[in-house]
Image (cartoon, rainbow, N blue to C red; front, side, top):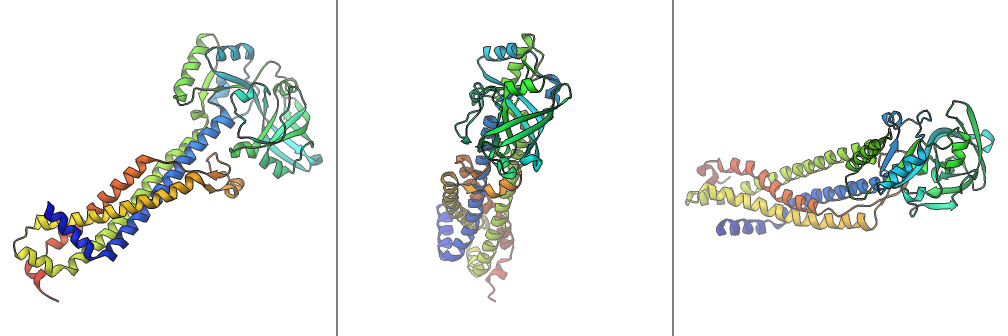
Length: 413
């Protein structure tokens, strides 16, 4: 074994330029993999936080009919025993707030500008207990109970050219199907890390929405803040069972069910990481394989002499693999350094995709800068993969080289 290692190290040193070029190609592949993995996992974490903080809370309590079609906005199946239901949820140690979600047409500028929106009646005092507002940049201010005012998302305001103090109209239908027009004043424009809120957010006082939509004492849903770090689905099921035992006919859906599109993107991310590892394998296969073939043909006479003097083929075989592993070690070290620098850039500075996200919905709930995260297991996997793949890719060329007869190896061209 000492001879094999020393022999491999000597050969690596004899062809420093070729060794570094091959190792650098492997390093670039590993570095790019670490960068993308960091960015995608960071996007997952940011998106999950924004979904919980700005869209659904940890879980949603609704009627069974509404839960069957959570994406549909309907006032036909409200939570009618709202005070008792709120008290029941809070009795289990959860923060909760009612919301009244409905589809409406937002009209401004005397009818010159309009947009179909998802409007939500919110409780001005209880809503912040479930939906934190510390990262919301508000131009103007939130409304108080009963005030005929509305708060809109910043992108929606830009698209409709809305200003603070401007009069707008919400046109919708009441619970009984009658047309209703709500004349409101824009009291605030909010900018959040969540593009959905920026693009479609429209909020008005809950009691005002209830009185105008024939929903007195009712809401379409109750948002619940779950215990952070615990299984959201398990908590939702336990809460539903507890409420059912108390006589309430409701369904409780966790944010993981309500944001299934986001989780589908996350699953696709795993396939993307696998594809990146495959590209690294291709780089290793082409680079290391070619390097080992060139090494053999340049040292063909030397190898033939060693075999003629009695050096066993297995020992030569393992020395070639050790040489390939050495290239993998160098490439992995360079790749970890390059990947570390790229990940550090993502963690501390990030990539600004504001222009892209502003124009189109790419699925992730991030409205501006994408930050990466440190993923130690990915660095370990990249280092091991670099060495293992480089070694495996040398097996074929090495076997092919050693199948050449000794006499042909000694023949000079």
